[in-house]
Length: 106
Image 1: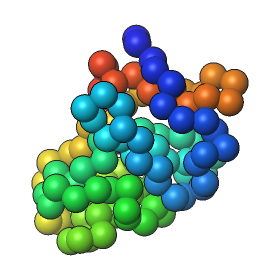
Image 2: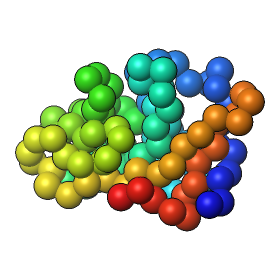
Image 3: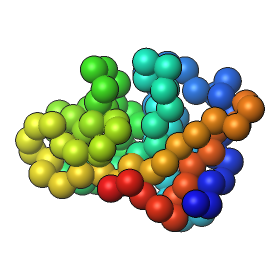
């Protein structure tokens, strides 16, 4: 795997997504219930930033049409979205959050 540093742990507030640009991709980094997640920062239905949505119950909501995506799998939990968002392996190394963009989980 090819992990890259994307943010520092203290930059991320629990349940407040952080949009991070890495090369030509924007990802949403989320700290939820003590675990970090990294998802592509674009709703598959409305092409709007997921980082502007709410996080609750293991999901992130698209603010525009209300689709909720599972943080761990990227799967949509409700309509109107029917396609998952890409989810990337995420880990913490010391105080740095690292993401593997080359090997999405979904």
